Every structure is written in C-alpha cells, then in structure tokens.
Image (cartoon, rainbow, N blue to C red):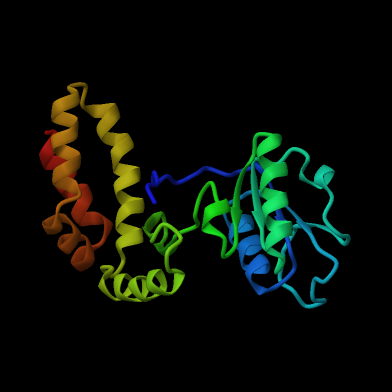
Length: 204
C-alpha cells in the first residue's frame, strides 16, 4: 500500500478515540503528548487508565461525538462498528485510523524512536505492526547517544546563522558542516562550546 510519510503538528487539534482498551489508551496518551485535544468515547474505560487530560464520554458510539475532529481512531473490537466510524469520520472531513483494519484506514501510525525532537518513524503500510516493533528495537539500539541534545543545539545555532549570514547557499553550507559527524563527535566530547566555536570559525 502506497503511503506518504508526514509528521503532523497537532497542538490544539481535536481528535477522537473510540474504544477503551489498551490500544485506545495508548493512542490517547501519545496524542496528548503531541499536544492534541483528545476525546475518548467508551463505556468500558478502566478506572486506572492513564489518559491525562482527555475528555471522557462514557457512552456508546454516536456520530455526533465526532464533532470537530480532524483525526479519528476507531479502536473497538467490533470490525463493523469501526467501519461505520470510518465512514462517519470521512463525512465530516476527518481522516481515520481503524485498528487492525488497514483497508479502512486513511493513515497508519508508525512505530517511533524518539530522543528529544529527533524522531525516527517505521511503517509497514499496516502490513505488520509486529515487524515495525522489531525494527523499532533495532533503530533504538543504533540511534547515537545525545542525538536529541545535539539537534536542540543545532536548532539554536540555526537562528544565529540565519541572522549572521545573508547568502542562502553559504548558510546551507554552514548548517551542513555543523550537523556533520565530526561536529557531532566534538559535541559529545566538549558539549555546546564545541559547536559555538565551530560556528564562529565558519561565519568569521
């Protein structure tokens, strides 16, 4: 199945999760971590479920409960109900993910490995979440130490480069140099000072 990889900014975006099992709760937590507004619709949410500040609607599914949603997750154990949720979601312009029903999905949620703002996503087009999980473990082992901190420092220095260098090509060249393996190694040895010194040499 052909897909287009994308990382969405969900801050303040209304999302709806229908279902109250372990999969639904994981979706809720990850959506809240991404800054989304989350409404979970279920009769069966466990009392100790960790759902943060999600809005909880303790009822059966009704189409009007999708109001305002941009993303919808159908996480019930009823395939026919999930398909109906998908149809209703599309009618209001939302895109939908149906757990274990790739044919009813508009998007898939990849397995991810994160270190700060560095995110590596692994997808299989809905074919095998288990395979994605295995690949995730391999990627996690291969991800360089402190890469998230390195990326955060590069973001800070990028603003300095933009302010100090007008030429776009030269600016890109400097940013490539700062993000090189040699710069990463220097950062791991000496911290922020190494990148700051490298930048001064590059823009002087």
